[in-house]
Length: 304
View 1 (cartoon, rainbow, N blue to C red):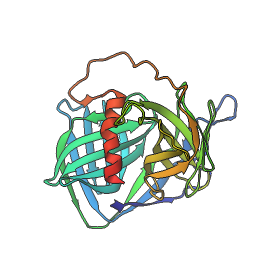
View 2 (cartoon, rainbow, N blue to C red):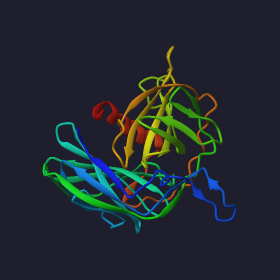
View 3 (cartoon, rainbow, N blue to C red):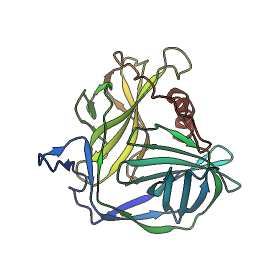
View 4 (cartoon, rainbow, N blue to C red):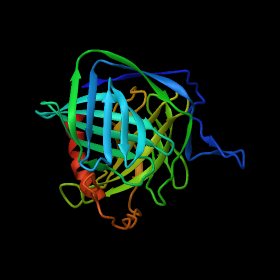
């Protein structure tokens, strides 16, 4: 497993403060303020990835570990921050970036014969959940170390919390209804949930499924932003723990998966009704969340 080393230049401890409401002059706790800055990316690999969907609605262009993802004319600048061998024939690349409305994370699937096979995306707007874009194209990477700069624009990212989400309480993690939570990893983070996935029927039996809290983690002191998934399992055992997985950060200083001792309550959780169905183009396939996470959960044991 190869990790990128990301260093912020010109960012201060206040770079990730909440946005200030111009009307009330008060900070909005459900927001993250990005300040204009430059990110230096130091990778021990050099990746270039290009591809698109058949109708051109989804496009990815990566050169030297940075580039852009286009979703239905929405352009998001992204940086590649991880290279992960997967199975006998694939390499995965994780990406993260931000635009004027949300923080975007994704996973790029490349075959060993340099073909782009899939692009999984999720962003903090909560509009689509995980989306598998049926892109095709080419991948190329070598072991040449690559240092490149990535510009971050000044933006206010608002996180819309789910109407219902489970509570968690432990020494290093806390989340209660209608409040921003907290998690302590290598440093302290605010925890802002933006999507809930009911995967109680995703386990091997009727009792070993889980509920996921997809969250933004905004550091209190060291100018880092992450997206991660807290998995709360139906089978708790005598010493319940929460699994934090798929942690994807601008500064890749955190373990991508870890267990946190905590009590939690998923008994009152009820999945919201699905949005009105809309015809899917050949650009992307939006699966039911439980189906998607059955697929994605297979990666947890394989990657980590």
